[in-house]
Amino acid sequence: MDFIFFIIAWLVGSFVGALTLGQCLIIFRFGLPTAIRWYRLGWLIAARPVTRYLMSFVFLAGLFLGITWIMLQFFSSHAIGYFIGLGMAMLYTLGRSGATSDNITDFIQANQKYINQLALDKLKNKEPGL
Image (tube, rainbow, N blue to C red; front, side, top):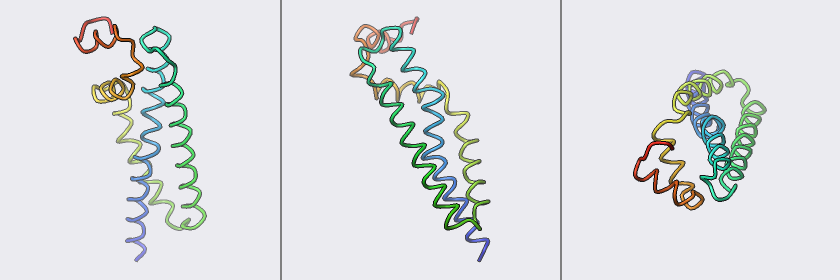
């Protein structure tokens, strides 16, 4: 029976890691630096994307800490499985958290209304320099 709880904790850790830590890693390594850089270059017409990424990061980090606290308080005997799941999710996300084509596409789609029209036209035409 302990093995089944270990597997469940592992799955919960994987899910929580992908949902919270994985997204935090993408925000920290790609979303936030890109938004700040684009804002400084004038490619973003407002700082709203920077604020949204910061708020998302804080929310997801808080959610992770809350879930982990609950796990350690009430299910501490299965914490090893949980942390193994978290670690696996982090390793999986690590390689996908940089400037991948999916992340770039998502960034442009999510922030399209804040992107300077000239920069957006260049992005759509895939002109060099962006």
